[in-house]
Image 1 (tube, helix red, strand yellow):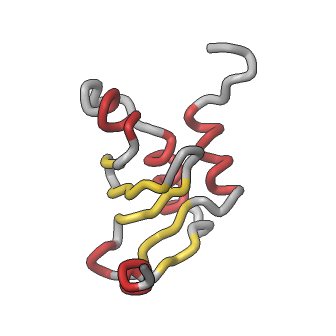
Image 2 (image 1 turned 90 degrees about the vertical axis):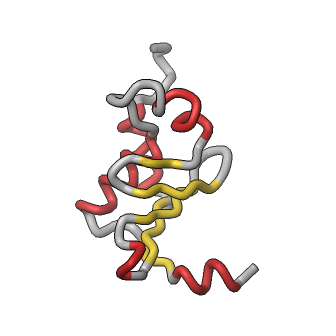
Length: 94
């Protein structure tokens, strides 16, 4: 790893600090998060699914790998920092 590169954990913590992790406020979507990453917004479903390219092309091939969006959602689940977002408001606001 290059000296100025962040680890996946550091990137995940930055997302939490920047309020980039939003938990859907719906009982049926209890493990669903919208994560705002560096290059877009992604749907994360815990314990281990993300719609980002890194997850689709790399993490699916290697089960022990996770992207930093998943890590951020896992941290947010255990630390009440994630903002809650109403699912209906997200769907019907567009």
